[in-house]
Image 1 (cartoon, rainbow, N blue to C red):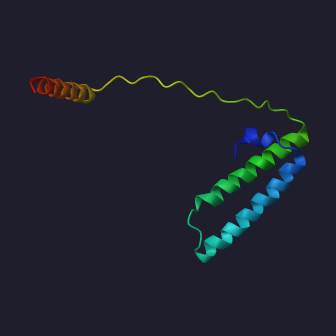
Image 2: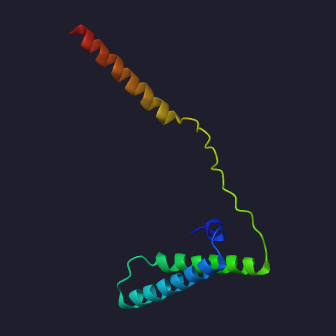
Image 3: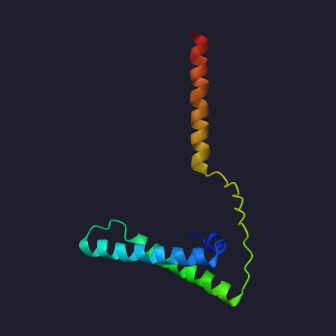
Length: 106
């Protein structure tokens, strides 16, 4: 859950979600104690969600307005080809030329 997504909810919805997440943590702790929990990161992620929700609730109480903006994904720059990649391309190119010559000979 991202903070920008959380900011879109009302106080009542946030309080309900906070209660729900805390119940989930409680249940996961019991599963961990009994050895039934496979993914321990679930607890950590839910604790972070609790912190995010509580932060947004506090912002709303204090009247702090945070603009919700979408992050633009950075444009990936093309990496220069390594010498090994160039060698592989030249070898495959040579194979294609040989295959084409063999087809023409038939």
